[in-house]
Length: 493
Image (spheres, rainbow, N blue to C red):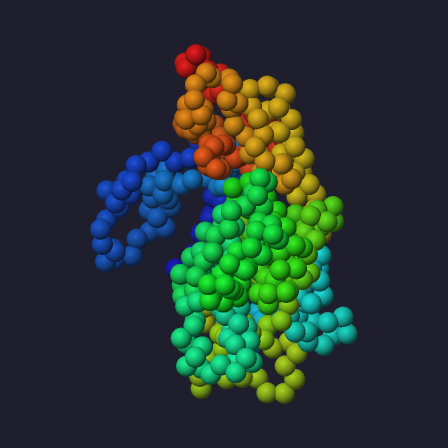
């Protein structure tokens, strides 16, 4: 493909993408294919000779499209959103144009420096403390800063490695040598609640420490008292607490842990405090939500996914650290083929030392496009629109009388179920009813949502978060929920 054909095909692909967005709401959000469907439709070896663009385009429409879950549909209410946008796509196109492997400043100075600046922009937009900024108000380099990771799971691993480095330094200050420390590494303990994302526990498996899962309270929150009790018990058993993850907006119910109380414990026990705000962190762009996050200024690290609820196409997970020293010390490996800049280095950050991979894409471009083309006011309006629609959905379900809300509706998530008294039977029967409701809603094909289980209770958890959704889409969700509930009651009664 030469540049002239690229111009032609590129314009055609933009039209194809635009038409997809214009029509995606008319498609069932959930794919109905069976496992292995694609293997029987495409050749089992790569083509020997080049194929035409027309053939590839046709295969996208006839073979790929049927197997897609349409996350960008305004009738997609599953999990948490993947909120792409047209500005982000344009930024990604420019990133693909440059196609850099930006492992250090020299590779592409603009890529490093734009990430430094844009992450400071974003940190200020969500109200982070100045400790997390890369550049101080006087223009000099700060101790902290932000970096774009692929996912919140990667962020968990990275900050846990930094936390281990901090713990090792503390053990050295007690007079332990390297051999002694190696003997006790397996006794390091990281703390999570039973509502923390699975990424935390996976990180402990990767770095080789222990995970302590603490029961959450009646509101699905990790509390100060529960954390302190677990740490005290572990210390009595000869273990070494070193890390705790507090969540701002859990996956199951969007619950908010006792951030300030957990920070108290982290301070007194010398733990690294990481705050996982993968979903709900975007809400902090709106000042009215910031009182809910009291305590984040005391954390060592903070992370949220701009690709969830901040209009930025996957992948773009924003991570900040208050002091990058332990992070960089833990992940820095020098090689002669990785030259370092000499002289003034205030804007020179080797982000390869802030993450697991060496190579990295120019991801800050799409975030830059989003923040400039929407502006802070547009981003806030986008968040508030979803919260308003979630509150409306909650009101509609309560007004119906057959449903109960199972967790406070704070952001865009609404957790509910059919009441136990609507259909006679045991608790098990009620759970089966709600599981069946999820199945029928999704098989209906007009909307998509998911269910979950919280302490043995099966619930539904639609999330309002589509980039281009309207109140009409939320109204359709209510309509489908009510119709499918009516059909189940008529069948089971």
